[in-house]
Image (cartoon, rainbow, N blue to C red; front, top):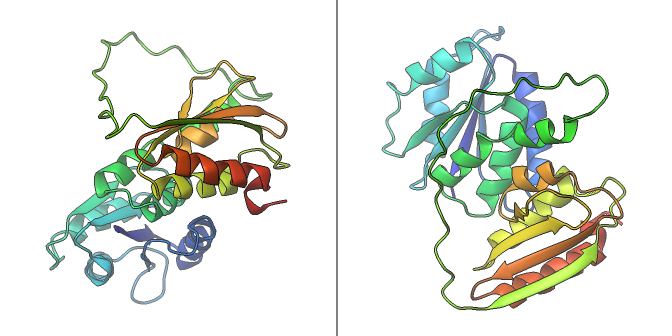
Length: 252
């Protein structure tokens, strides 16, 4: 499993963000270390302390570093010159709080450093999607047209196993961060590709392995959803997800 280093100007800010993220990480979250403040206790960042934190938690799977702002980014870049570990280290440009939550949840599911890094870079997508059309929200300007990007396709599952479940989300706040985190961690334990579709929405199906994709759906209480799975353990993962939906993901 990858590990995570959190770089912040403020130890209190970093600890609060880590505490929130670890609430979503379940019983076996990734190792998270904080490198915040300076050696004299003042607000700021310390490249040497960041390097020490990276070395302390380095694993063969790599280390993801998230930073708050300004000199935290400069200090993290400088810290790479002092790191003694041979582990891969990735500096993420993800938003601090949303990125940290996504990193902890997806890393806990066993995702690789590349997969976690890609997920946290999309960490604002859920907020953007849910605020579209909301009061007080200015519509974003249309971006200039761009050439269509090449998209990667998932490899075909090892077997043709397919399973489907349709149910109703009962959670009072819908499929928000906590139940979405449970969903992602459950999917990560099985050899299956899972998607979820809000049948009352025109949004495309979301990947069950992506916290950001699930939250971008904006599934509310009472929404009817379809969960599709394919792969060697399609039946097993659908069975557990069906139970979780019925139980309100432990919130009811």
